[in-house]
Length: 342
Image (tube, rainbow, N blue to C red; front, top):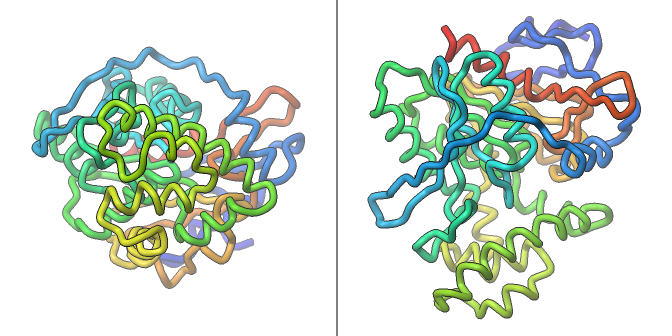
């Protein structure tokens, strides 16, 4: 395999081969032999990982439209990484806490941005969040940049927040960022939703829906102005159904198909010029291989770093069974450190 450091701009970098080295000089990903396959890599960290990280300090950020966002601050350090969680996730998600801990170990500051309504409290407005809801991310980034204009900023987006990040970068070429990293991105929402409606994907779908139903019902049981009654929300059994009944009407889309068409980030990747690494496993069970963008689809700012294995927000390494190493934590920190730590 050709050394990925020799890849032309925009060409995918396959980082799985043991002889390869990442463009940031870090170690290549070698999947743990005792976690074979896409599902083992995905399920193991989701269910069993309990990272020991620093305590997070909450902040309520008031928004100009009268709503609010919940932030969770890690230890201060050089620079600042804004970290976004995936669909149904939060600051307590293991992959989020793992990155916060690794950045803190290297003396880099971080703050977790909860999407609207995804934190401890229901948000005030009817809307929540979706794959193209980058306005809140922009508000957080510009607000924090204004608090300390000399501090370099980066954004890390996992899964759905990776879509938000990439949509934002495509729409706003002047985003105030020194670096961006998106991981396990659902590039085509319709294809990814379909993947979660079949076979083992139904297990993931049920897992996600438990949290999403809980958040939506919690809010609309109190306020009573949901697109459908809270009792109907609790009977949702498919993500596509949730997007038809909630995501689309709450955010101005005709239906789930219209939402998927407009909010998918794949169609916008060619517009991204800022330094951005997209880390993605070809065997991600949430994202069909056909949905992964080709080399010619990404803009000159994007490094498309593909691994053959790794699952969805997994990337578990380690030679000893039961003693995992979470490669993604160090890989993301390797990418951010030069831009943030100076």
